[in-house]
Amino acid sequence: MLPGWANDIAAVSSIVGLLVTLWLLWEARKLQVACLRRVRLPQLYEALKDAIAGLTDPLAQWDIDRKQAIYRFQQVSAHLDGLLPKLDP
Image (tube, rainbow, N blue to C red):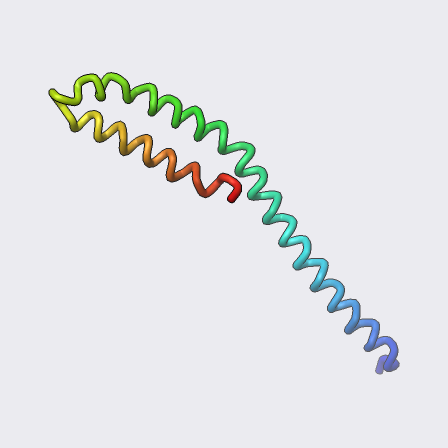
């Protein structure tokens, strides 16, 4: 049998350990989001820039064939949809 003060120390240590674990989980989540933004944003920017650059020819031929222009607009929209959740509010 342990003395009463040892049980109290064990209980306090458990609570402190739980708080430290929750804090570390929170910090890991913030780090993951920061790394995701820093790594993924330049890739998304380049993909968006390429999609926009590829939009000029289909827009010039809008009267002849709209399917290609609509397809390019969908690509640009998909890149923007992927970019928005990664930006700060």
